[in-house]
Length: 362
Image 1 (cartoon, helix red, strand yellow):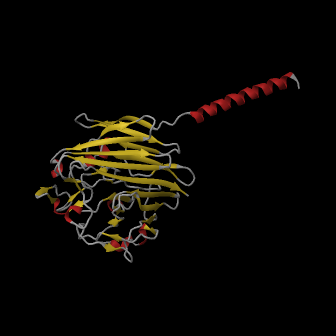
Image 2 (tube, rainbow, N blue to C red; image 1 turned 90 degrees about the vertical axis):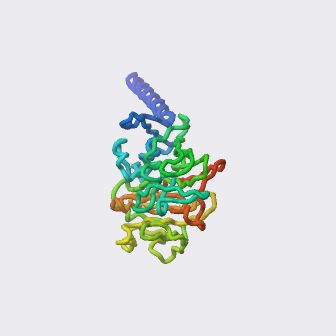
Image 3 (cartoon, rainbow, N blue to C red; image 1 turned 120 degrees about the horizontal axis):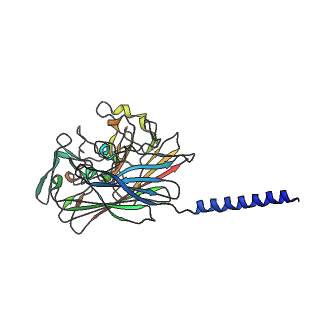
């Protein structure tokens, strides 16, 4: 072997070694699981934060402290391509006007008939912001609140946000401290753990009103939905439950078999422009399956589990069915129906509930 060839082989070996070490260092680079940055100010100077969570599979969630909103969630399709699967916008000012954000809803998600309720002999009057009824906590609910970052660790893809709703806010009794902990696991799960404690008897029904679009855009009418429920709570013309619990089998609301969302949606019109129904999952506190949503073209699948007794299916009726909401919850207007699971929370007995959103692709 001549000297020129020896030199060339030596150089090739050095380059290979350097490349190997460089690539190894890239692979060994730790994941930045938690990151926090500024996200706009109100006119009064209130600063909001944005938290980014990452897992080892490439998923990424962005959460802002305005409304405890999940701003974005990037999930893989069957080819490993990531896209944001939530309806969103890009600035604080736009979020303050946007009616499709993945915000925490409270104190009481969904509707309260007559915008009032009685608890322990006292009648509490609420804002009538949905006709003569109250919806989603009133005119300024938790979705418009300033949440604070209460706990985090730089090496864990999790953050705990807190909000103190003062006694009398939106008409509700008691100082209510609410926390939500968002965790992005390495199993491609976004977990939401809620806790609420009060110093006076009150009512609480928390959910996240995420608008999901597993394709990243376009209509959701071709999505395939499965909800393992056998009964639902029928409503009147104002979407207030009648108090009945009726079987789903044979109705156009039945998704006990995987069904295309758009298959029967026209039959709901003109009374409704789409689905907006509460499905009964069962009263047990164990984590149970609530729904499975499949987007056929991308192959993305989202499974929803919860400790709560119901899930509200809403098909983005005010935005041309470009999103699907699967809101884990207690039943709407529960405070007026003794046969519904109770949403009363009392001092010393905090409410604790969870929801889990798992992302698959095939």
